[in-house]
Image (cartoon, rainbow, N blue to C red; front, side, top):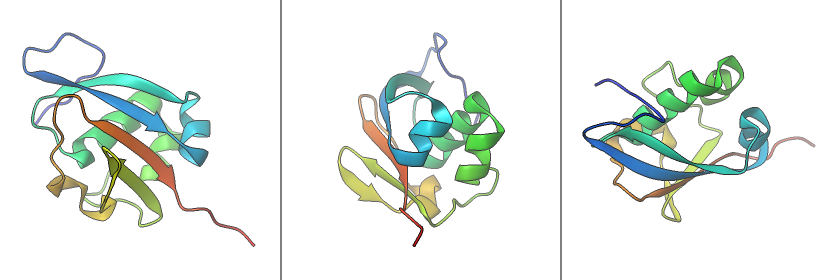
Length: 106
C-alpha cells in the first residue's frame, strides 16, 4: 500500500490529527487535517506521519517496525486503540486521531 499526504488522491480520506505532549513538540503544531489513502490503518498513518515529520518523530513512534513503541498512545474518535497492533486498526474518512506518549519521569 502506498501513502501520500496533502495531495489530491483519488481514493483518499481526510483525518483530523490532534498532537499532544511530546508528540506535539516533535511535530510543532496542535492539530491538522491529514489526507491519506482510503482504507489505511493506524500503522499506515503513523508511518506516513513519520515520513512527513522526519527522524525525531520516526524515532518516537518506532514506525519502521510493524509494531509501535508501547509507551505511545493513540485514540480514534476518543476511543483508546492498541497502538502496538496499529495495522489492525482501520481508519475511516472523518476520523479524529489523537497521538500522545505516556508521561514518564520521577
